[in-house]
Length: 145
Image (cartoon, rainbow, N blue to C red; front, side, top):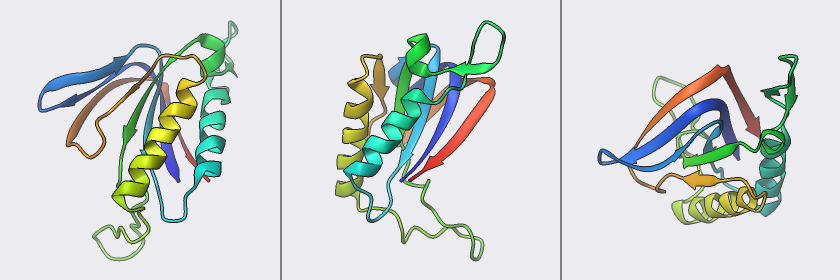
C-alpha cells in the first residue's frame, strides 16, 4: 500500500467538471493498493497519517499532527501509485491490487481516518477525477507499508 500525502491550505476533487468534495487546511491523501495489502496495512497507514507531525507549531517547527490542529482530510484513490517505472518507458501495473480489493481497502482507509472525528471527504473511486490543491509549504510525503 502506498500513499502520497500533502499538507494543503485547501484541496478539492471534481468529476466531469463538478466539485464532489473539498477541504480547507489539512491533508490531501492519494491512496494506492497493491496485491497482498490487508487491513493491518490500512490501520497502520491511517494511524501514521493522522499522527504524523508535519504541521507547524507556534515556533514554525513541524511539531503538530493533523489531529492536533483539527485539520481536514481528502482521500483520493489513485491506482497508478503502485505502478512500476523501473523497466522501459511505460509503467507496469502488475503489482496493483484488483479493483474490488482496492475499493474495499480504500473504503476501509476512509473509515479508519473518519473515526478520528476529523472532517473527511473522498474522491469517487474509479472515476476520472480532477484534483486541485494549494500545497502548504510545499510539504509532501510518501508512506508505504
